Image 1: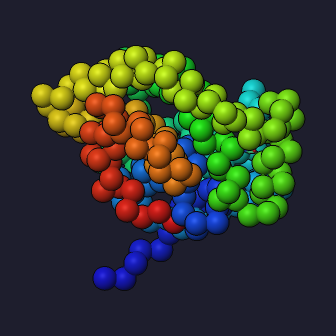
Image 2: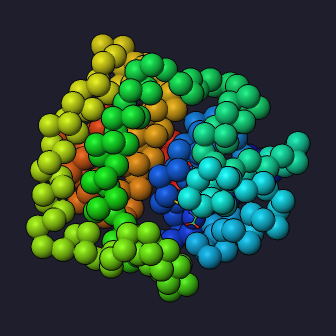
Length: 243
Ligand SMILES: N[C@@H](CCC(=O)N[C@@H](CS)C(=O)NCC(=O)O)C(=O)O
């Protein structure tokens, strides 16, 4: 069967493995794969994100740390651009409603909030210093410079000595509790809302896939908790296409 021509260009973050690795990029790719929307990917190096998206006349974000971020999309049939994973998800849901993907739910919001607060900092600690190893030299230079100026110390200090273990140990109970919430509807199915996926599942699976590409041990550590593994495995069928 002929491949349908792409309706979406997905601007995503480049790495030396040639696959999608950013958590927000994965969130959107999961939607594209789930809805079976024909797309092509433009992988951008860190220093090229702002100039590329600016040249496309995408309005900058005024409330976040970075004015231009990936993922961003171009919807070719309507010549529409969107940036920021939440805005892109809303656009895709409105434009491609079938199969439906619930974008919000009370349970999903609670899980996302807890996961960001609890697992987010541990991911930051373990993954940011190691992300460097899968970036090109140009992206490494940009990433180190921008992240170290925000942190005020070398990236490697995050995982020096026993700091990393201490961070994970401190979140153990809360990480397990967030995983238990993911199993609230286990009688109906493996997803957060039961039988069908919602954006929260893609938020979880995207973060886990990011960990898996950057440092498999961090992914292993997370999927050892109940909840995370079930959601990840249930989403795996929409993670086969990675580029
Ligand atoms: N709120 C954004 C965050 C995305 C984000 O932080 N993207 C990073 C790459 S993972 C980025 O583009 N950073 C731009 C930079 O560092 O200049 C979303 O969910 O889309």
